[in-house]
Image (tube, rainbow, N blue to C red; front, top):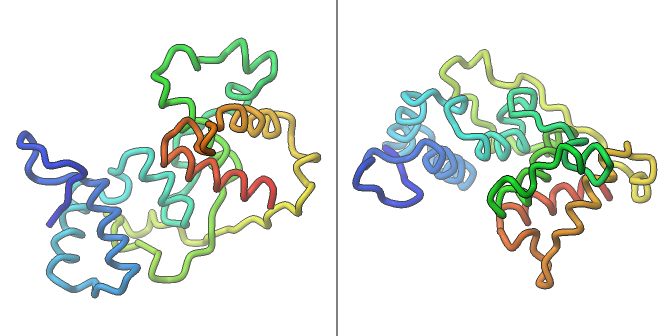
Length: 193
Protein backbone atom coordinates (compact mmCIF):
# COMPACT_ATOMS: atom_id res chain seq x y z
CA UNK A 1 0.00 0.00 0.00
CA UNK A 2 2.97 2.37 -0.26
CA UNK A 3 6.02 3.35 -2.26
CA UNK A 4 9.53 4.47 -1.29
CA UNK A 5 11.97 6.91 -2.84
CA UNK A 6 14.74 4.40 -2.20
CA UNK A 7 14.25 0.98 -0.67
CA UNK A 8 15.40 1.02 2.96
CA UNK A 9 15.79 -2.23 4.90
CA UNK A 10 15.29 -0.23 8.12
CA UNK A 11 11.93 1.07 6.93
CA UNK A 12 10.34 -1.44 4.54
CA UNK A 13 6.88 0.08 5.05
CA UNK A 14 7.32 2.91 2.55
CA UNK A 15 7.49 6.71 2.50
CA UNK A 16 4.51 9.03 2.89
CA UNK A 17 5.84 11.63 0.46
CA UNK A 18 6.68 9.13 -2.30
CA UNK A 19 3.29 7.50 -1.75
CA UNK A 20 1.47 10.85 -1.99
CA UNK A 21 3.18 11.67 -5.30
CA UNK A 22 2.60 8.19 -6.72
CA UNK A 23 -1.06 8.18 -5.64
CA UNK A 24 -1.49 11.66 -7.13
CA UNK A 25 0.07 10.58 -10.44
CA UNK A 26 -2.09 7.47 -10.64
CA UNK A 27 -5.20 9.54 -9.95
CA UNK A 28 -4.24 12.07 -12.64
CA UNK A 29 -3.76 9.35 -15.26
CA UNK A 30 -7.14 7.85 -14.45
CA UNK A 31 -6.58 4.92 -12.11
CA UNK A 32 -9.84 4.36 -10.23
CA UNK A 33 -9.78 5.59 -6.62
CA UNK A 34 -11.44 2.40 -5.42
CA UNK A 35 -8.82 0.12 -7.02
CA UNK A 36 -6.82 -2.05 -4.63
CA UNK A 37 -3.55 -0.13 -5.10
CA UNK A 38 -5.22 3.27 -4.63
CA UNK A 39 -7.21 2.12 -1.58
CA UNK A 40 -4.13 0.67 0.11
CA UNK A 41 -2.04 3.76 -0.71
CA UNK A 42 -4.77 6.09 0.58
CA UNK A 43 -5.00 4.06 3.82
CA UNK A 44 -1.20 4.23 4.20
CA UNK A 45 -1.23 8.04 3.72
CA UNK A 46 -4.14 8.61 6.09
CA UNK A 47 -2.56 6.43 8.80
CA UNK A 48 0.49 8.71 8.66
CA UNK A 49 -1.45 11.95 9.02
CA UNK A 50 -2.69 12.49 5.48
CA UNK A 51 -1.37 15.40 3.44
CA UNK A 52 -0.68 17.23 6.68
CA UNK A 53 1.89 14.53 7.55
CA UNK A 54 3.95 15.27 4.43
CA UNK A 55 7.30 17.02 4.41
CA UNK A 56 7.64 20.69 3.44
CA UNK A 57 8.72 20.08 -0.16
CA UNK A 58 5.66 17.90 -0.78
CA UNK A 59 3.43 20.58 0.77
CA UNK A 60 4.95 23.16 -1.60
CA UNK A 61 3.96 21.08 -4.65
CA UNK A 62 0.54 20.36 -3.16
CA UNK A 63 0.01 24.11 -2.54
CA UNK A 64 0.95 24.97 -6.11
CA UNK A 65 -2.06 22.92 -7.24
CA UNK A 66 -4.49 24.00 -4.53
CA UNK A 67 -4.26 20.83 -2.42
CA UNK A 68 -2.67 22.48 0.62
CA UNK A 69 -3.00 25.98 2.00
CA UNK A 70 0.05 28.18 1.50
CA UNK A 71 -0.49 29.69 4.95
CA UNK A 72 0.34 26.28 6.42
CA UNK A 73 3.69 26.05 4.59
CA UNK A 74 6.73 27.38 6.44
CA UNK A 75 7.17 31.15 5.91
CA UNK A 76 10.57 32.52 4.93
CA UNK A 77 10.62 36.34 4.82
CA UNK A 78 11.81 37.62 1.45
CA UNK A 79 14.01 40.31 2.98
CA UNK A 80 16.16 37.53 4.49
CA UNK A 81 16.98 36.30 0.98
CA UNK A 82 17.25 39.35 -1.22
CA UNK A 83 20.33 41.35 -2.16
CA UNK A 84 19.57 44.33 0.13
CA UNK A 85 21.68 45.40 3.08
CA UNK A 86 19.25 43.69 5.45
CA UNK A 87 19.33 40.53 3.34
CA UNK A 88 23.13 40.48 3.45
CA UNK A 89 23.15 41.07 7.23
CA UNK A 90 20.82 38.19 8.03
CA UNK A 91 22.04 35.91 5.24
CA UNK A 92 22.54 32.30 6.21
CA UNK A 93 23.77 31.25 2.77
CA UNK A 94 27.26 30.34 4.00
CA UNK A 95 25.86 28.49 7.02
CA UNK A 96 23.97 25.78 5.14
CA UNK A 97 24.80 23.10 2.59
CA UNK A 98 25.21 24.35 -0.98
CA UNK A 99 21.99 22.70 -2.15
CA UNK A 100 19.78 24.53 0.39
CA UNK A 101 19.97 28.07 -1.02
CA UNK A 102 18.76 27.26 -4.57
CA UNK A 103 15.69 25.55 -3.04
CA UNK A 104 14.89 28.06 -0.27
CA UNK A 105 14.71 31.07 -2.60
CA UNK A 106 11.95 29.78 -4.91
CA UNK A 107 10.03 28.25 -1.99
CA UNK A 108 10.05 31.64 -0.25
CA UNK A 109 8.83 33.38 -3.42
CA UNK A 110 6.09 30.82 -4.11
CA UNK A 111 4.88 30.92 -0.49
CA UNK A 112 4.99 34.73 -0.31
CA UNK A 113 3.00 35.12 -3.53
CA UNK A 114 0.82 32.05 -2.90
CA UNK A 115 1.37 30.92 -6.47
CA UNK A 116 -1.40 28.46 -7.30
CA UNK A 117 -2.35 27.00 -10.64
CA UNK A 118 -5.97 26.17 -11.41
CA UNK A 119 -5.91 22.38 -11.66
CA UNK A 120 -8.44 20.10 -13.32
CA UNK A 121 -10.62 18.14 -10.88
CA UNK A 122 -8.51 14.98 -11.11
CA UNK A 123 -5.59 16.91 -9.52
CA UNK A 124 -7.58 17.52 -6.33
CA UNK A 125 -6.87 15.32 -3.28
CA UNK A 126 -9.53 15.92 -0.61
CA UNK A 127 -9.63 12.19 0.14
CA UNK A 128 -6.08 12.38 1.52
CA UNK A 129 -7.04 14.59 4.47
CA UNK A 130 -7.67 12.86 7.80
CA UNK A 131 -10.16 15.67 8.47
CA UNK A 132 -11.80 16.54 5.13
CA UNK A 133 -12.86 19.90 6.59
CA UNK A 134 -9.18 20.95 6.46
CA UNK A 135 -9.11 20.64 2.66
CA UNK A 136 -8.79 24.07 0.99
CA UNK A 137 -12.36 24.90 0.01
CA UNK A 138 -11.57 27.55 -2.56
CA UNK A 139 -8.64 27.79 -4.90
CA UNK A 140 -7.67 31.38 -5.42
CA UNK A 141 -5.60 31.88 -8.52
CA UNK A 142 -4.05 35.32 -8.72
CA UNK A 143 -3.83 37.02 -12.06
CA UNK A 144 -0.33 36.78 -13.43
CA UNK A 145 1.33 40.16 -13.74
CA UNK A 146 1.55 41.46 -17.26
CA UNK A 147 5.00 41.51 -18.81
CA UNK A 148 6.87 44.47 -17.42
CA UNK A 149 4.94 44.52 -14.15
CA UNK A 150 8.12 43.41 -12.38
CA UNK A 151 9.14 47.08 -12.28
CA UNK A 152 6.28 47.71 -9.86
CA UNK A 153 7.05 44.60 -7.79
CA UNK A 154 8.06 45.20 -4.17
CA UNK A 155 11.77 45.73 -3.59
CA UNK A 156 12.21 42.44 -1.75
CA UNK A 157 10.56 40.49 -4.58
CA UNK A 158 12.78 42.13 -7.21
CA UNK A 159 15.81 41.53 -4.99
CA UNK A 160 14.98 37.87 -4.52
CA UNK A 161 14.53 37.39 -8.27
CA UNK A 162 17.94 39.02 -8.83
CA UNK A 163 19.50 36.56 -6.37
CA UNK A 164 17.81 33.64 -8.15
CA UNK A 165 19.24 34.82 -11.47
CA UNK A 166 22.69 35.12 -9.90
CA UNK A 167 22.93 31.35 -9.31
CA UNK A 168 22.01 30.21 -12.82
CA UNK A 169 24.64 27.73 -13.99
CA UNK A 170 26.19 27.79 -17.49
CA UNK A 171 23.86 25.01 -18.67
CA UNK A 172 20.83 26.95 -17.42
CA UNK A 173 19.99 25.14 -14.19
CA UNK A 174 19.53 26.84 -10.84
CA UNK A 175 22.20 25.48 -8.53
CA UNK A 176 22.42 22.40 -10.82
CA UNK A 177 19.45 20.75 -9.08
CA UNK A 178 16.35 19.68 -10.98
CA UNK A 179 13.81 20.53 -8.23
CA UNK A 180 15.24 24.00 -7.61
CA UNK A 181 15.32 24.60 -11.38
CA UNK A 182 11.67 23.56 -11.70
CA UNK A 183 10.58 25.75 -8.76
CA UNK A 184 12.66 28.70 -9.98
CA UNK A 185 11.12 28.34 -13.45
CA UNK A 186 7.63 28.54 -11.93
CA UNK A 187 8.73 31.70 -10.07
CA UNK A 188 10.09 33.24 -13.26
CA UNK A 189 6.86 32.42 -15.12
CA UNK A 190 4.77 33.97 -12.33
CA UNK A 191 7.00 37.05 -11.96
CA UNK A 192 7.37 37.84 -15.65
CA UNK A 193 3.91 36.65 -16.67
